[in-house]
Each structure stands twice: as C-alpha cells, then as structure tokens.
Image 1: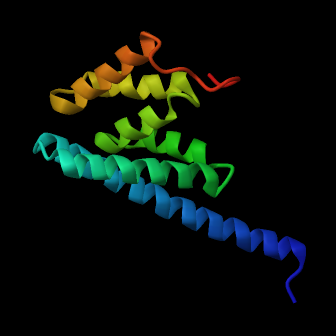
Image 2: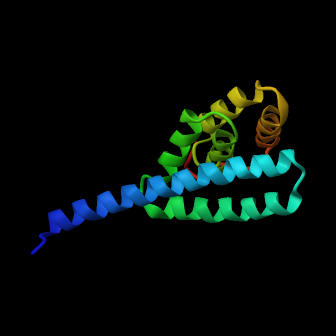
Length: 134
C-alpha cells in the first residue's frame, strides 16, 4: 500500500519527467519554426506556432514550476529555442525575458532581428506583463 507521502513523491517525479519532455518538445518546435522561417515555408512555420502555443499551455499547466522552467530554458539555451522561450515568458517575468532577448538581439541574422523586434514591441507597449508579475 502506498501512503500519501509516497504518492506525492511519485506524482512529483512523473510531473518532472513530463515537464522535461514538454520543454524538449518546445525547444525542438522553436528550432523547427526558425528553420521554416529561414526557408520561407510559411505553412510549416504556422504549424510550428500552433504546436508552440499548445506546448506552452501544457508546460504552464503541467506543474507549478512550468513557467520558471520555460524561463530557465530561455536563459540556458542559445538560439531560436531561447528566443521563443523568452517571448513566451515576457508577460510572466519581463525583466529576465528581456535580458535574454537583448542578448540574442546582438547576434547576426534572423535570430538577432527577431529578438530585437520582440524587444521593440515590448518597449512600445504592444505586449503587457501579467498582473502582479514583472
């Protein structure tokens, strides 16, 4: 028989594994989206955006640590996965997400351009932070 503490521990392990799997899929979808943009494959890029939206929702709802884990992905990764994770984290922890986007904006090519546009849109007030979050 499993007691409550053991059940909670098992749930946490399963949640952590699920969250890690979702984060890996998010990173892969972000990289695939960037590749689709670079090759000007609009249909594929749109499919990956839909996938990213669904993965973001799943990450946020997978565990209480989901949002922080996504932001950590932004800070730890380099490239499209970091940029996309930062954009999805802007409304949650804007200062940390902006730091990632500013770092990426200094890079050459489409990645740097897209990061700089995201920063510009944020600074112009096109996006807003979640209430009580900064």
